[in-house]
Image (cartoon, rainbow, N blue to C red):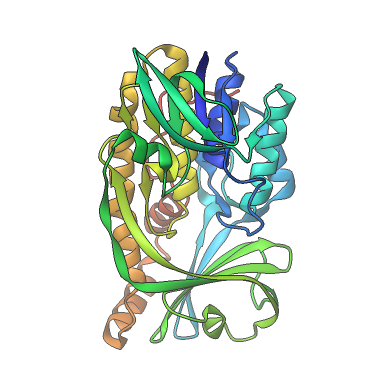
Length: 364
């Protein structure tokens, strides 16, 4: 009998396994993939996630490997409108951390192995049947297993969510976006992100590792919108994607739970996806240890719904390319960004410190 089976060994599933393990539990964690992703995928780790991951020992290693993003530069039609400085935040970690998802997963998986728990890779979850109050889970690549509770951390196309019959309501945006990870000479400081608005589209540029950057555009060829003075040497990875905003009808049905992209997906604007999933996982681990798992839905689904609304607004604003609207944005930015309250509000919003920390979060 397995107390907790976690399906999906991305950052969310690994966080859940670590948080349970440091509380004396021994979850089983499986993943269909044979290893971490080769591409960088999610790269932004916010201050709240650093708080959460400190107790299991991950934060120190993330900070040692990652790059600190200390500010955001807002640009429009080739000119800088202003800077949003994270150093003004009243937080132990007043910055965003850039680290490719592969490296984040390697850190979390190594910590889990140090606690005697190995990820079972090449094991695909194939469904479950209820037997009394327990579940009989089926796999590709492993024998069936009896499980007391099942947690789907297996992404937007979650097999766990589908097997539980939980709807995933929402919609896909009409336009394709494109991202490119590039090695380049960059005209700005390596510790700042750049949000560039033009009449041809919007570009988000973030440091990835030393000498490399993530470019994201609401349209094709993000490199075409790179700031003047950029010299791209190599495109490491490029991908087109269609943004979807969806929310699971329930995060908890009986002994089945959902976390991360299995429960909510949205635009990458604001770097809320992986970070929100990490908070899902840590909250669920705390509730399971407290014997109050029934509170998970009430604690995390409203928070995810709120983020979806915020990110939806951000994404709509990013798609504003018209000249008159650009001019209005430029005027407002120049007048408002120098004001200390606006600086604080913008910095807290971008770093996801615009909501209070969960009551369960304590120093390690």
